[in-house]
Image (cartoon, rainbow, N blue to C red; front, side):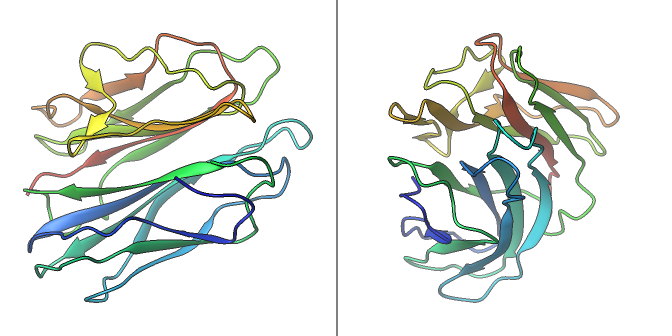
Length: 221
C-alpha cells in the first residue's frame, strides 16, 4: 500500500529463495496529464538488475490520471528480509491514502531471462468507461499470464472470471481507496497456458470504469 503524495515507495520485507524471479508490480494514482510513471526500481540486500517490462499511463489530460507499471529481476541467491523500492518521476496524487499498491511477486520455476516475455497495454480513459479487458499472445509454452489494473472511478472489488484470481503468492492483491474512490489490483491465471501462440484474455466482467491495464506473461524455466 502506497501512502500519500510521495516520490517513492517501499515494499514490506520478504525473503526470496535462490533461483527465483521477482516482479515489482505498481498501480498508482497520479494527476491527469502529469506523465507519471516509475523511473527506477532498486532493492536492499544482494543488488539485482531491475528491467522495465512495461507501463500504461494514458490520460485525457484533464480528468483521468493514474498508471500501472511492471518491472522484473532475476534473483540468483537466497536473501533474507529484503525490500524493493520504486522511485516515481513525479510525486503521486495528493489525496487521502492509500494512493496505490506495490505488489512484489516471487516466482519459482521461471526463466531467469524474462526479456522476451510478451506484454500488452490496455486502457479506457473515455467518459463512458468499460469493464477492464486486455489480452496477450503467449510466446512460449507454459507461460503464466497476469494483469495489473488501476480503476480511476470507484472503490469496487472487480468481478474476476473463474479461471483468474486476485490471490497471488498466498496474498490478496487488491487495495481500495474509499476516500478518493480508486481501486488498485493484480490478477493472475489460475494455471499456466500450455501452448505458445495462445491469445489469453485477462479481464473483469464488472464494473464499467475508466482504467489502466497491463497484461504480461511470465516465461517458464
